[in-house]
Image 1 (spheres, helix red, strand yellow):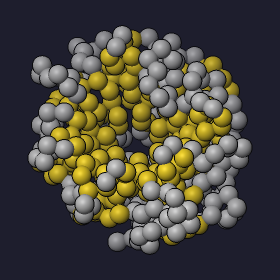
Image 2 (cartoon, rainbow, N blue to C red):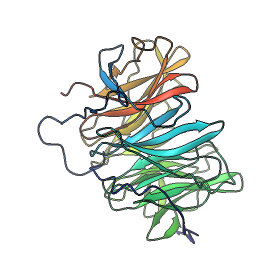
Image 3 (tube, helix red, strand yellow):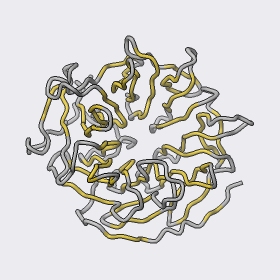
Image 4 (tube, rainbow, N blue to C red):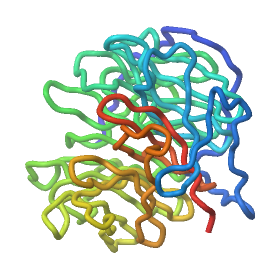
Length: 358
């Protein structure tokens, strides 16, 4: 039985009103027609174009006024609005949206305690997010649209579909519970602890929950408001679902290591890591079944694109900035552009790779 909660969701801040950040999100039901039209930002001083160490073109984002290159991009819609966070001072992260075609920047979440990060954007330009770091007491889950910021309690809003339904989690004592938000109200998903990571346009929700007496969170899909095990792993989480109902995530795999998986109609495929890779994590899947995430090579992460189960190293920007040794991919549009970050340690910057179309 679902337990209805009050959202306490009142608009608390109006920030830069930059029009609608509209476009077609990666979970749109409409497949791209013909060859995708990849973005080329006209302002090279804002978005210089590079070729990665593996030969894949990418652009590096720049946010006016940022102190260092520390930050992330996590999602992008087909209009070219990418969302994530930027470092603006000691301990200060704020959620941002960047138009990779024009260089326009929208800052949001400046009224949130302890900083904020934008997690997802839909076709209507609605942005959701939450805390950069785990802060049980901070009211950092938020929804943003056309300059109006609405707080949704502690935790984070993790995803939003094109109908405006939001999923995420909040804190209850030392554990978290998953929820949906629509029409100004938060509704808890089942009674198990856990978190909701993603929702598609059909309303299918995936994430992680403690069920069946498990001492750990396991990958689940919610059906009729209750979490149902994907029978993938005894420990892990589902991170993304597309319109076909294909689900990706990470769990303890056959090698007894964290491994990326694809769940498709009840069948589980463990995705191959890069040569020499140890653990692997899948973070997003688009409408064409292309998957992104990262593989642990040595002691660092490397961004990966899986097509038909085969991994492609998205590469680093080592030709331009030799010290960089880390890359991670967090999102992929239906056009095939990959959203993530590159850098070293905490000194990282949002990038958008453009893999060759197939």
